[in-house]
Structures are given as structure tokens and as C-alpha cells.
Length: 205
Image 1 (tube, one colour):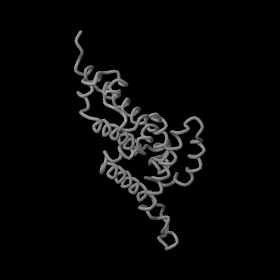
Image 2: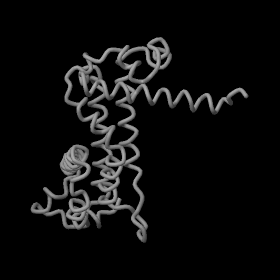
Image 3: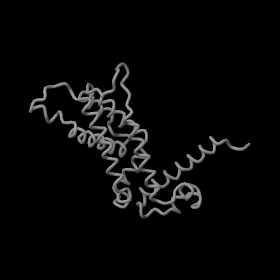
Image 4: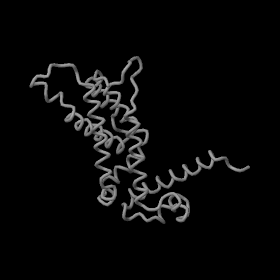
């Protein structure tokens, strides 16, 4: 019985995902320059010629990996409110980002290695800056929307600066997630989140 269009599309997506995963593993193991197209195809279990039907070059593979990471980040921004509350809080967002990283820990562990490779960062070029800029813009919007209703005195000003707080929050979440994927079985995520909850639980988005 011939395959339906839906089945054929699903097979294509599965093959594409396997190639991306193979490339990510080899980029992490051998470096971007050290991982050959033939080795990536072999790791993915397909011929080199077939791989070119999906990706024309290693640069395209690198971009696909980058876009997969961006999809995870976008998902973390789609945060839902805690049960019994009408609006999500800044804490709900932080927890969602950490839990999502833990769910996809293998991907983020390998991507962490790729982020330290100058050759890979050079290939991505301006996309990395755009990526970080978009994250910071969204974080700044979250921080601004959730500002506590306090008098804008000179004393309060440093704590009511969404531009600065967004950068601090970015560093905080990135740091937690980096340690989390390095030691997923021993990192005290629940304890860390419990410590952060009083700080951000009443900062509604």
C-alpha cells in the first residue's frame, strides 16, 4: 500500500531531525571544522548524497541547529499561569524555561559545547546577536509589565530598571540551565526554584 502524503512528510521530518542530531553530536565531539559531511551522513545512517537532499552544506545544518534552539526559547516564552491564578508570573516563566531545558537536556548540553566554538559562532554571525537581542527584548517586556507598584524614588530606581533587570534575568536563567544540563541528576533545581519563587511569584506578566 503506497504511503500517504502525511506519512511521507512525517518520514522526511524524522530523517531531517536525525541528520540535525547527528550533526550536533559530531560538532560537539570534533568541532565544527572537524566534522565532515560524510561523517555526519554516516552517523545519521544515510548516504551522503541523500543528506544533500535535506541540507546543502554544514552551514545549513548549523543554522538548523540554531533554529531548533530558538524554537525552544520561543516555547519558554509561552508561559501559562500557575493553577488557581489568572495571570502567569515572572517566576512561572523562569520555571518554564528551566523545565524545558531539562526536558531537552541532551540537545542543550551539546549546543552548549557548540556555543564555545569560534568557527561555529563566526558562521552564524549576526544571527547570534539578533537571537540574543530578541530574547532581551522579550525579557525586558516581561520585566516592565511585572514591575511592582512602588514609588519611583531615587532609592527604588536601580530595582525598577527593566532594561538592566532583563540582562540580569537572562544571565540568571542561562547560568541555571548551563549547570542543569551539566549535572541533571544532581543539580538542586527544585531548591533553586524555591529560593527564587518569593522574589518573582508576585510579578505578574
